[in-house]
Length: 90
Image (cartoon, rainbow, N blue to C red; front, side, top):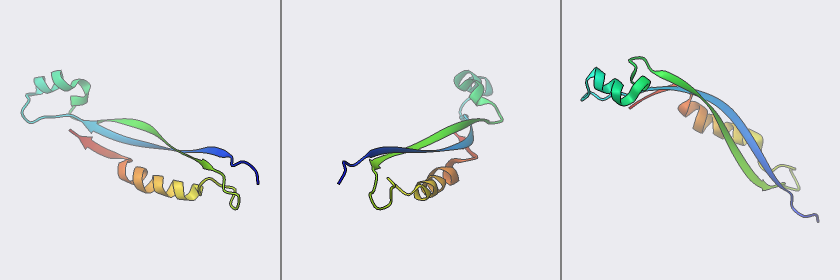
């Protein structure tokens, strides 16, 4: 039997979201002074590059560290569907 081979597997997705900052207790001038361009009436967005890396030994039977379809499904459920194209206001 050969020595187990450790492998890193990285999967990547891109998501986008928007945000704006506001406090009802601040005047418009105070809001702009406090939050800068993030205080705009209209939100602004960001794009994110999300990477998930798993590390493990290659399984002798399957030749895999993990099933890529499982990782992709989890990333879709936990990251993409929860965070992509959402608006976050503070």
